[in-house]
Length: 108
Image 1 (tube, rainbow, N blue to C red):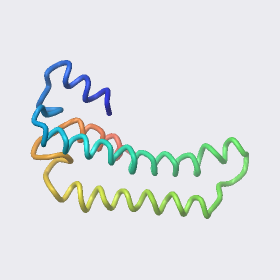
Image 2: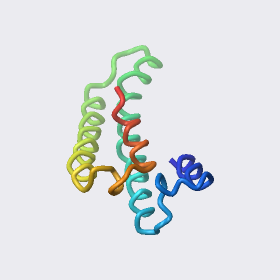
Image 3: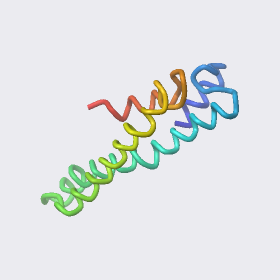
Image 4: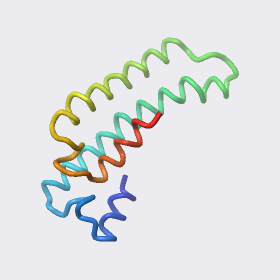
């Protein structure tokens, strides 16, 4: 996320990463939330379901799978019912680096 914001600043793409402090704070707010919620819970679920069983050569713990699946569901519900309800884009009225991060979380 910092790389996207750096590149937007470097190439003077203020439409992607606003220069207005309030608008920039909104982008930073989502980017940080995404990192600590969607990214963290999604990667933890993937590790629990795929990586750890491969390493240990045994099925995943159902309890751990349920825990991380629940946390992933909570994060996706917040994404849908908070972030996507406020405006057409994740961090305001136009596309920003937040939307690039948000899109990467929805690719299946």
